[in-house]
Length: 218
Image (tube, rainbow, N blue to C red; front, side, top):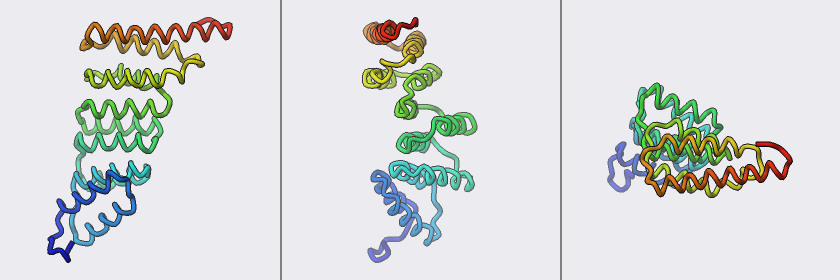
């Protein structure tokens, strides 16, 4: 950088971090961070966002959490962009659901950050990626700020993940969650409500068939 006649700045290093964050190249991120510190340049919210994103894509949950801890120690408050990067990193790292809920509470309650569609979808995918589709549905039910994009993501997951529950006794829970979700949403068109209703009925039919095959009552 100096050889090119460039003066080291936070903006330049953030640009480099942003580029490498997309690749999840952990060692490159460390090299840039080390050089940044060698010039006594202080990281800002954008710096930490790129680091969290990059460490997440590199599947280094320990570094994601260390970065978050360092950021808090320096008194830097998170924003919704970092919030989204954080949740996505937890998804990439397959973080335990308990840890996900704890960081969610911290960001939404302690820091009172608003929730947008990207963040909602990220957490939904986090639960679904742990093969816990029912918990993912229940999360959506508990979320007040929902929109059609979130609903459509849910429908995609329902279609692809449903087969995992066909041979289990979790189907009645799944159907109950879906119907609850449907009843709480006022933004759906009649066509979308019918689509949702059909999915719920299909799940229920599969549950009944499974119960009949096993000689049990549902």
